[in-house]
Length: 247
Ligand code: HEM
Image (tube, rainbow, N blue to C red; front, side, top):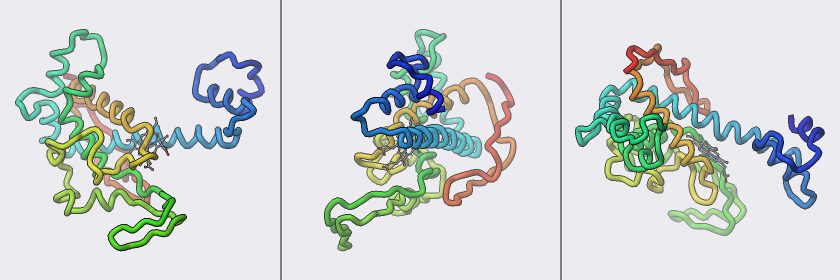
């Protein structure tokens, strides 16, 4: 596609207005460091980084919710005895509008707790690489400059010293904690300068999906599905739900 697009591009005028077109314009610039090979790599890795991640994490969240009726109830009926998502619908000024930024930021505490807990337990990224740019000493261990370090987020996420009964899906453990950026012991989106560029976007998409799911239907899993790590996260059966009632 990139080659075809490059051949047909005659000027800098935007015909498609998409990411690939912007990228091709960059490649055409003589002094730019992005070449065609790198741009194809970027497009492919962005597809995996953005689509596969969010859809898998949304699926696992639905699985966890469907297996934990208390959590589903709480999503509908939150801890101040109001329906979290029903309250949003009732207070929405423009009934035709979708989820607003204000609703997402300040009216979905329990939803954010559910998302954090799914991200922790899902621990989608099995490992990340870092390079020590200078000699570092951590807990008596010296990491010489230039060494590659393999960071494994699940070691933190499943550490019982940090998360009590770590294999339990328990969104309430996030109560009273900073939810959107999360503590240093929460690395579902990595950390530091290379933190996931789409973290906020992924959270938003998941919250919007959950909002529609719990406000429009009663649902249950069609079949049991186990989580498999080999080493990437996948499921023994697809996560499929049946809608028993449209609310
Ligand atoms: C639930 C969904 C997602 C999860 C769990 C996730 C997780 C991660 C992780 C663990 C990293 C490595 C961070 C590091 O090395 O510190 C990463 C990097 C990245 N993610 Fe995501 N991600 C998700 C969604 C997205 C989305 C929706 C986008 C784009 C729209 C995206 C774009 C990126 C990019 C561009 C990087 C590389 C950042 C860099 O190296 O500077 N991700 N993600």
